[in-house]
Length: 287
Length: 282
Image (cartoon, rainbow over all chains, first blue to last red; front, top):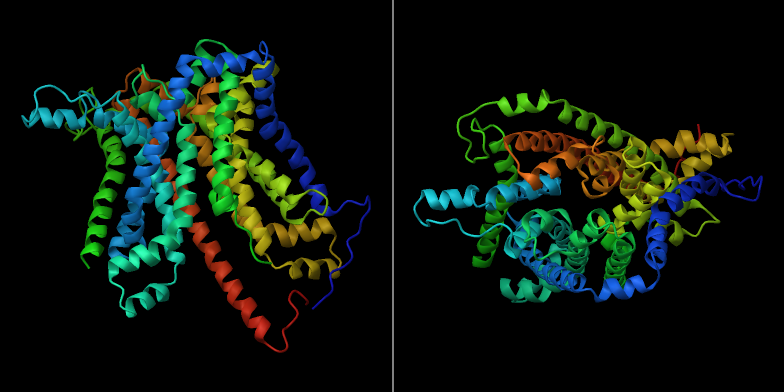
């Protein structure tokens, strides 16, 4: 093996640092400065009391509760439907696996906006589901599907489930079949193999996917805006309204910081158990 | 055995639920009636005619392409260089560079949008291609960073060392050995950055103006105020375009994974061979 040549240090700075420095400056200016600007604006427009006003305002507190409840439910639904799906994707017959992978990827790669629009078409009063039910004589008046929490939950779960399915699938394929076979050969029934071997070993994947879905739900804007009830606003909508409609950039900034703190807190808390890199998809090679 | 079939049945039903919305949008775009219906009433391409003949849609299309290309190019450069910093720099702390690089995927889009908006209003560049492209470059750069970092930390450094020993400058070794090794990962990241920009509504909603709008912003405006089959037609065009790009991404990623597997097998073979030939020496 060759010994690595001593790096030439013209200015005492290594080559990678020279290359990365302009990108770091760009990152600070474009990624970090906007966040700092929000923080500054929230404290100075007009004063730190903005936080007290924003955080105690009725609409904000209600939106936090509405959003938090939605995020918990959507995460639960995503995990619940993801287990059978990811399991069939990892262990089913080959033809089934191809169909399932194609379906989840087709959905995943269709943008959030287009899928939200699709749910609007499906759930509208004159939409696909209601016209079908009315035409077939089952109901005479359209069911109130759109502009409800139900519509938001269905749309959000549909949009976010691919995240939990794909992380869970990756985790399931990393479980060695020998482990499950060993349990089965020692007399465990398929059910107890699942509960005592597969499920515990899949938990890191479920946690990583679940926390991703949870933090994405907290900041969601488009789907609640289109499918939700305009009297029950979600956090994202309240923030956009403060900035764009009411032109209260100080209040909007303070609310943005509260949302950011919630997201980072959840991420750090769960990251301690499953690793931040796994949640964010950062992978390092072993060399 | 019952649990197995239960699971597969649930999964197949879910699969239908997954693709149904996309099919409804595509189907309703071919309708002959003037309101959205599914299954479509009759068959016509009139809504596509409408869209492609409408200067407002065509301008938005041009804006989206321009913003996406510029954002992807910026994301490739910035993401790759940040990955170099995180993987190789002896001065910049790796955790700090990684933290900086992932800010845009940790911070919710609504919050980033508010930040970009305040900055852009103060500097006076809302409603411009460059302003939105900078913001979208931030959203796309983490994809490039994550991919290139994985490639950089699994690349065999002895090839670069061989190039240096054979007289290449650091820049020469970087451009002719490292860059080709990480280029596919950077390209995949760049495509993902383009698709992110292509589909993005929230930040774009803050950064656009009535005279400068992208496709998703225009679609969103229609979805809110009242969509018609032409909305379905545009949504279909946008989706088909994204899907085609994702297929390219999938193809290149599969190729990369195969190359990594081959390299790993080869490395193991080299390690076990008693007289391993020196790599890169000619």
